[in-house]
Length: 294
Image (tube, rainbow, N blue to C red):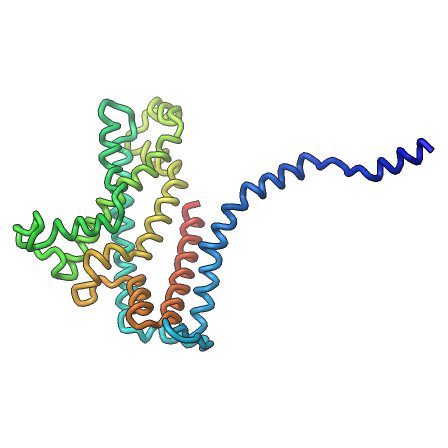
């Protein structure tokens, strides 16, 4: 009788959860809020954009399936070819200049010396200004009527070349300090013993820079280049606020074409198709960058 009772009691008890299972459940619980945010703010809108690109999707009215008409008419947009050329040109110039300037600033404040903290803060400070606010600031400063630089008589946004040059200066001022901070983090992760060994072997500064600093800085450079190229291809604020795409649509970026199709022509399906194409280009470029720099 006692054995039967014990057997029944044993069947009634549940086996204790394994430590690995508890850790897995705890990890899922911690990751759940982030997963919900990614699903809600990234994956769901991405799926919606792809669906919209396959439909005639007016701002008002019911959508109608028309694939692949939205993709076929992208090249017929009068602004699209010029926007592609301008965006690629702007991306190439910004990537080269911003990378060189940020790397120079990072090397300048790499070593600890009196006053280096002040310069690090001063270089990074423009990065704390919102991009839209920075564009408005430059628009006011370079205004020929009321701006402090208006007395020079230069039409800062009056010609295509000057508009592009002024925008490049704005972007360099805004992002050089931020990219400097990224590169500075990579520089400080390089062991000091490597530099000391190179100097003891008689390596020059240029040899140290090309044979030690740049190779060991490659992962950080990859991150900075991905951020720079992606941000340049998606440029919108500086051209929308600072130049408004002018003069004569000479500074219209690809994202501005998407904006105009969506909110001027009310063609949300066409705007979504350009967005999908731009996303595919970004994924391909980022994959190529990672393979090359790896």
